[in-house]
Amino acid sequence: MYNMAKELWYRKMSYTPISTDRDALTIMDVPFPSLETWESAVAAIGSNMFEGYKPTRRGIEIIRDYTTGAISFEAFIRTVTDKAYAK
Image 1: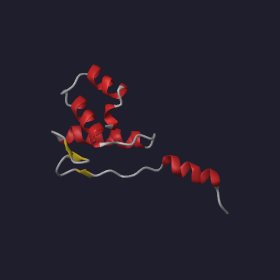
Image 2: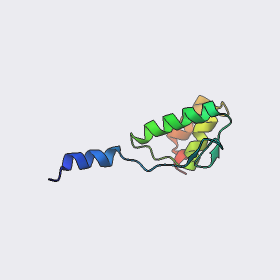
Image 3: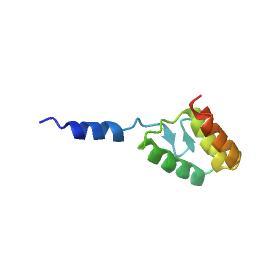
Image 4: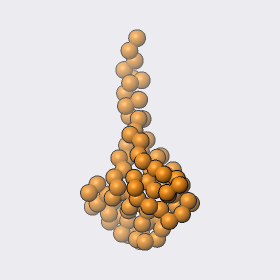
C-alpha cells in the first residue's frame, strides 16, 4: 500500500550528496586548511542539507572563509542577506 505521508517525509528529508575528500581536505573542491575546520564544515553543511540547504561552491567558500577568520561575522551575514552564496 502506498503511503503518501512517508513519501512526502522522504522527499523533504532526502538530499543530494556533495563531494568531500578527507585526504585532500576539500568539500566540493574547496580546500580547507585543517582537518578540524574541514570536519566542522562537513558536519554543519550536512546538518543544514537536511533542513533544505543546497550548497554551492561559492557557499562552501564563504563558510570556509568565515570559519577560518578570513571574513568577519558582518561580512558573512552580508553575503547571506545578499544571497551571494547562490552565485
